[in-house]
Length: 95
Image (tube, rainbow, N blue to C red; front, top):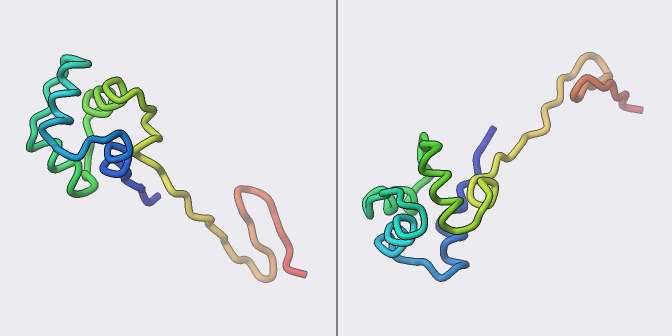
């Protein structure tokens, strides 16, 4: 499942463009230490992994839900058997 990483856009919508500013707000509002470098890394590219503590601190600091900046994009999977297709356990016929 591909992931859509929207952190930079969400922060920009709320007027945050500087990593040190984000780091300071997270600490002031939650007490969680998120270094400026860590914020830079999160802003510059989608992380390969994200600590639950970090995601919780971001959600608490900016009054978000996880889905506000991390979105799973589902692909429709179709399996072809002759002229029938099965999608999520349901059978559809091409007629």
